[in-house]
Image (cartoon, rainbow over all chains, first blue to last red; front, side):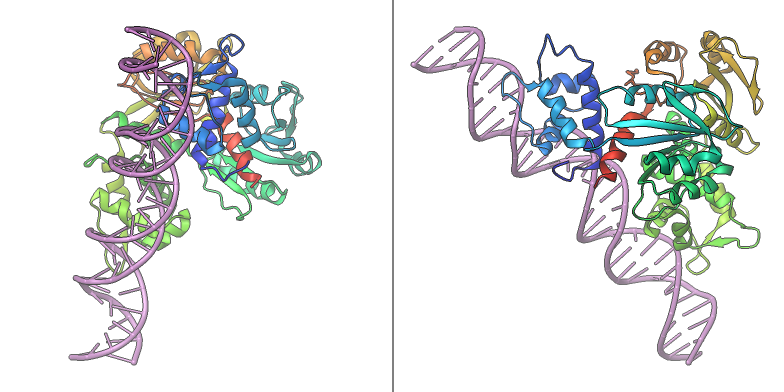
Length: 205
Length: 205
DNA sequence: TTTTTATTGTTAATTAATTCACAAATAAAA
DNA sequence: TTTTATTTGTGAATTAATTAACAATAAAAA
């Protein structure tokens, strides 16, 4: 977290790391910008620029040292302490994301999931699943700071108020309801209805 | 679909329409750019510019005629024929989206959902839920053109191949696996892992 | 040695998205 | 009537994101 990086660069750095972790770097410890670019289907200049913004240098002939690059990305974008996340109303999708973060190497941990239905006994991937009525107390007790929200629109406003008053720092909002949050909360909205209508528009030329 | 609109404009037009449909336009038939902007927490110039790109004009004092605007947005971004959508592995989130589109007024219809688990008997909101093994034949039989994909990453590559070979036109990819698709397919990817890591970065200053 | 080749790091150029700013228009107030 | 106050429509300015271009470098080939 040295410089103040552009949002898109932060997102790409996360992608670079994930891709590199799946790369056989024990055998091939270096990678060129164009190779990584090819894997991600983006422009190589983009990669060189993003790494430059982190202050990371490669070897003009060997390319980038993958282990060092993975480490540098961690130092740049990862939080210093463990940061806890909760899923509210997130379905199947949550399982895979939880599995990714709840491995030993990540600073983000999925600490809880909340459901609207009556008290579920289930838990998955070591993550407890609570009824929504317990949300506020669990968020506070666990110190959860990030929320992924994907409940039906009729519940969104009410639940978001509870979330906001629980003192979280960031929300990914997947409901198609626009949420108003205080300025100290970082929010990103992904409205599937407008994304589908856009998809429809551009697939009809 | 007159002009070739910028992607972000198409997305916002969809948002404008949804917000206006919830506005009491029978009592208040006109709205000013700054009023709609306030509802959506965006810049009023943005709205005026987007409407201008559609070739839609307002009254310099009364503002925009809401009914006419809703109609114009439909003529601009909606497909001419019904276009069918399928959800693959989408959970709770899908229900609300399906409910929205499967009303009489939308040209997009959620025609099917597919699950990885053994043949489910369920259906929701009049949408049939099939086992994934039926996917290719159903996509073809129903003429489904758009896919929302949200399966666990280990399944993503394989399932996407089937989807692509079924002849769809567009995919919203929520798996954290980057998909390579032929050029004639429009794809938009939303990688929740990198979005969460970005959220983490910006909530830690 | 010298030449060729390939790649980084970075500035410059381009493209896209957003916001500013103001002329034109006209309803309402004076 | 005349003035004041608003709001649209839009060109210009700004900001952000992406891509191109190339000097500097040094390994490998000649």
